[in-house]
Amino acid sequence: MSFVIPVSVIVILSTQTIGGPVHGTLGSTWGWEPIQKTILYFALWGFKEVFLNIFKYWLMVHAFGMAKEDYELIIGPRSGWTGKEVDVLCKTYGRKKIKIMDAINRRLGHTVINIFRIVFYVYLCQDNEIRLKTAILQLPVISTLKILTESGSRLSDIGRYIFQGSRVFDGQYGRFNLVVVNFWAYAGRIIMFQLLVRAGHTDQGKGIFLFGLAMMPLLWGDSFGEIIGSFFGKMTFQVYGLGDVNTKTVEGTFAVFLSSFIAQLVLFYNIFGLSTDSGFFVLHPAIVFFYTCVIAAVVESAAPRSTDNFFLQVLSLLVLMWSMS
Image (cartoon, rainbow, N blue to C red; front, side, top):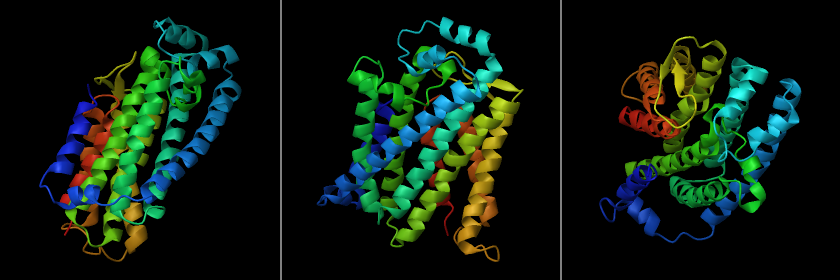
């Protein structure tokens, strides 16, 4: 049922003001380019999955000394898990060790795929219209693939490889959470490009720069939030979601803010130089990035599990667009 929310936003942005920029873009001749870009995206995505699966095997079996039968249990289907599996794994290897292992594996995958997405949209798609159409084509492909393979009973269980980021502590919901995560995240990028097209930026460079800035809390904030929370987090609080353990830490939340803020500053001043604020925003960039990242940190903690990636990128873009001069 959670799929209804992002789809509804997409439909509203597509149909509101018939004849508007988004409606005109979607109603124009699509041609082969969005299809070609989508094929290229998933070809590169496949290579990424191979790399991450090799790393996961090395991390768990060699670096952390996990038995191969336990590794096979973790990467296999989760629908038959009862909750005892997590307890046995924690007794064997230690809860903290499992949590750290999970964090390293998941955050490497998160960082690699989001750097890839930024590079793909910035350098391999030439304008926001193509980006929007390509993002629209990607959503049904990834969602269909994830839904069909979630149970492990179809397609020779290739889910063992494409769900490599499943969290151990999510138990039987490990794969299902990633179905929801991917749907919301891919829908979020559709909405981001809808917003950029609706804004009518004649300067395509400015629009895609906003996209890059808005992705920083998702790329670095979400990554450092889990890493710092898993390694050093002491002050925990409950969050809403599906899984055996639904907690986050104050230390992780602060890491979301700080890493997002630094990343946006570095990206901005790498483009414009340290000697000027460029007049890009109505306020000094540091002030804009400060309140953008405060909102990102709050959203990352408050959003229901599996939807935080959506809200991190979409709300960051909205705040940045609102702050433009």
